[in-house]
Length: 269
Length: 291
Image 1 (cartoon, one colour):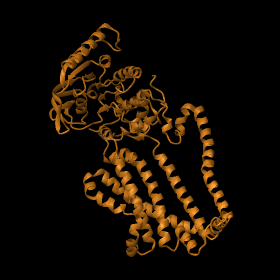
Image 2 (image 1 turned 135 degrees about the vertical axis):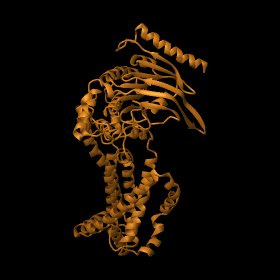
Image 3 (image 1 turned 120 degrees about the horizontal axis):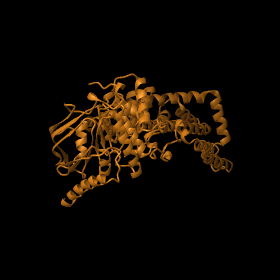
Image 4 (image 1 turned 45 degrees about the vertical axis):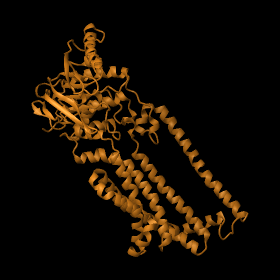
């Protein structure tokens, strides 16, 4: 399918533009130092169109691996990952991804980095420029179009990385600990920004995070995973309208429940 | 949006920020530019102080006759000879011959080194088979190849070009090869996620990543090539700046020898300096921000 720059769905996307994910009995192992590490065992998960889902769990629970499988950067040993009913076999611009380290190309300006994501997209150069400018405004980087990545702060780099992932109008955004390397104040700002972008784009987002509060603040559902071998432990439905109040009782309670579950595991291990 | 702020990492940028970026903090930019202008004059003065001292010692040595005047000519005589060589057009002519040789040789050898370096960088099989031989071949000094080359190629232009090309090959081959191998693998993920095809990947990711190594390699190739050229011109040539120097020695005109030595040094420095500027331009970005 050729990705186009059709601007007809700037408003919260509807129908065919909203992807769902169907993960069935997925297992994945890696060869490490002669042995094999079972990263995921028999994981099943469904993500609804427009839903915000967070994956939390201790290191080694395979949450990043799961995200890479959805992105198509890795393929499962067994089981299937399907997006919109189509089996995922390789990466696609319809599934945007943001890494923990922004991975902007250091020799390209903010503008050129975002434009690169439209390299394989059909459309006139002028149209693409307009789209890039729109994205720069959307993530709040106006005035920094010509800056190189090493001149940006961590938060700004991540904004640019998010803009790069959103530029080709993906129907799904995958976030691999996008705010993990930022200071807590910046992280708070960017959580609100992510929430705004999610509401603006209307697409499903799947985020890997270490930060339980962040997961509860943003998500419809929080998936808690167990390590060695990686598997789904429990899924929490988070109720309540957004923006959520972090001091509210329901918020604190569900956050505590998730933390207890994670700590329980730590003591058991 | 407190995360919007420029990090003070500007020291990493050689020659300061690009003008369109400095406009963020204009007053600083102005004072920085002023300081840069001031420090440039100081740098030039400091750089010239040592040559001035050397000329002074040289004059004293001549005046005190520490060495015979036939061996150590006076600076004034060297200056005069140099001026004569320059005004007669002979210097320009010999220099043009030498520069044409070094450019041709460095370009041929450098491009070959670049191609082989890229091939080795991208293919491990090729590297395993051919790299040891090629490296050993090129690690024999140029002078070591000279007798053989002279027998096979004669002492015409081909000899000089081949010898310079041979000298210029290795720095680029090794530099580019290592740059490709040390490229962060994570950019592969980016290229795949952005659905970049082979061409776009080469153009937007591989080439920019190795551009600094290419610039550095060319700079090294040029300075090595320049030295190799002077040598081969001294040993087997009827034109060129190295020949002029040899001619001066044979006719016992040490003033000519000194004048050409100075010209060789100055031209070599100018070539190197020019490429250093180019090298800095290619490394305006940095990997520092990228973990």
